[in-house]
Length: 230
Image (cartoon, helix red, strand yellow):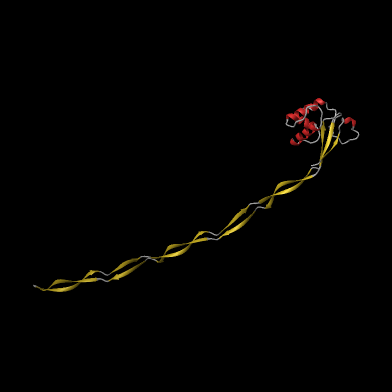
């Protein structure tokens, strides 16, 4: 970063005709410097989209398993069997005339003819069959977006800013306050009321460390040191 300046080292009233672009708030007796910042390229990290979110459809086929199952191969039935009548021989005494009898053999029904009902049980057989475990289906799978971090150049600077200065007629007592404050802050400077190279170097180091405009004894620097600029 390059810094240039247009410096007013005497009270404003003495040069107001030469510089017409001073800050609108400038008062007579105040001194200002305009600090210009050159353009520069600054690389910054930026998170950018690499691939947008999407989805895919996955088809799952039906799933089957083989199991053993008892299958009826013949139904139960009922049959009827005919059982013929059965007879038995009995002997019977029969009177043939008074005082005379004979014994005769005779067939007598022992059990009448009948039908016998017989149950024939069903017949079964173990067979291997395919059984459905899950139906065929479609599944939507979400695929999240992906991002990458890239370095992107950004153009900065190219601006100017007015800073109010301590004027050339700043009393030695005030300069001595600045020197004492710089020394107390860890930037040694001889407290002699003279703004020489040593004080200048201490001031610039302090300004750089505290992100202040470097190279001029600005009112902002004085106030940052805890000193009233008046």
